[in-house]
Length: 181
Image (cartoon, rainbow, N blue to C red; front, top):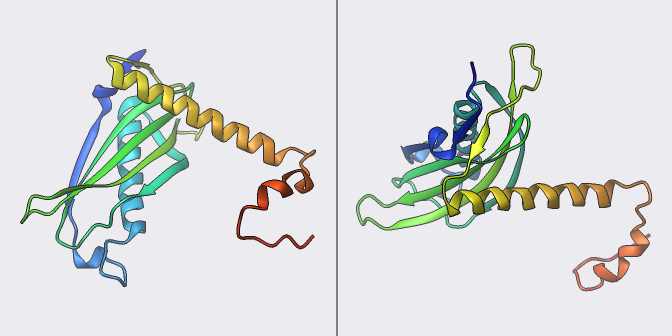
């Protein structure tokens, strides 16, 4: 029987990995695609642990690459369920790197993955609720609500059949674009 509510701490996950030359891009920095792959894995593990079900990635929001990661640095990813809906969860991920020789630590990346719990027939299934134990949990939950609402509003506004580019021409005037309708 599934648990009705779980705290974020119950499914929080942390992984660390040493960055090797095989993870680098042509500029000698760790490839962003490799980091995204690791982030998807930790989001899956965190969401699956919370939901007690197989989970799939529904969306990846606000991937912020803040600082480059160097070969030889130790990265640590921390994931937490920040929000739960009926069948979905928003997993917040923070990536830090540490130069293991100097001890310098950098915040390199933050992101939010929306994960959906599935059963063996690939049908979405309900997930346990989230117990908010402290101010940080509440802040993260509210931030996720804002992220969801903003995404929904954006989709509504720009997917609406009544959308007219002409209404937005004044907005575009301050950008480096040339409108050629």
